[in-house]
Image (cartoon, rainbow, N blue to C red; front, side):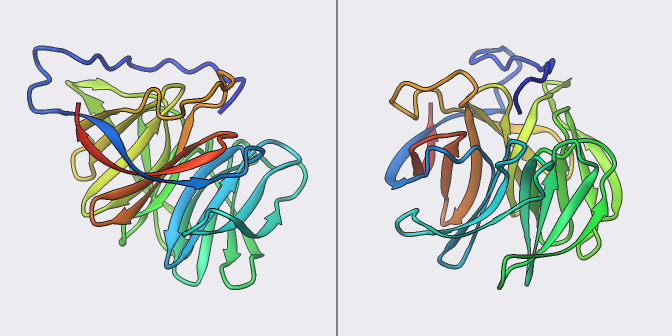
Length: 248
């Protein structure tokens, strides 16, 4: 997000009660090109394709990238007044959030055409599919649960670290009962237990992009590749990084 004041819990590297929380860093395995004009809001992987959502009013798109090279294959624009946000795979369809437009968009994956819009209660930030439901962030410490197929909200949960809420939850990926979330406005990632909302790992990705960038161009965009590997990028970054998370 930009131009939005968020109060979030600063997660320190060392706290006496953090003994059970793993402290991690990204170990880079490879680098893919990324369009530096893409204001990344969400990623997911499907086969040999990376699907990316980009934001900003008048510039928001749903994009299809080659998972080997990072090169753009296709892009579909959102309505010009919409601000695109997180995306999630739903089989033959894709769900894309909007920031404060009050709707989620359902897309046909094969054609990248919009099928319908459904009402969204509150902000849309990050989105992922854990196989049973869609999980949404709204920039707070809350995770919102939505049903597959129709995007109806079914419940919510607060994410905590050492008992404190962790606000600023942004782009998501989820699998195997775990949720990984970028934390706005930092270059940090948290691993969350999907059953309890408790943070189990902290990832410090500061310095992953070793090039000058604007303060707003933060780490944002995380997708699980399988076999313990992730794809990370950021807003207007010139690269996406294939990484594993290693002890800090």
